[in-house]
Image (spheres, one colour):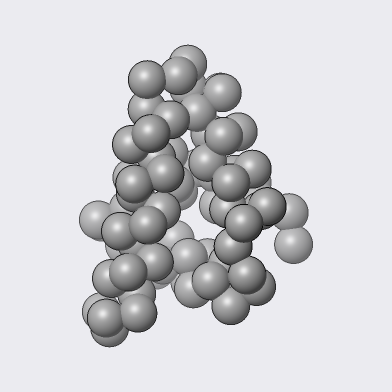
Length: 71
C-alpha cells in the first residue's frame, strides 16, 4: 500500500468514525455524501480501488458507502 493509499484510507476511516454513532443507514449515507460532495474524482477512484481490493483496514461503513456511491 502506498503512502497515497494510506492517506485516502485514513481520511475515509475518519469520516466513518464521525458517523459511527448514527444509525447504520444514516451513517452509510453520511459517509457516501461526504465522499461524493467533497472528494475529487482521483480520490474517489483511489477509494473505489481499495474497496475493490477488499482492503481489510477500511471501515465497513466506508465499504458500504463506496459500493453505493454514484459514478
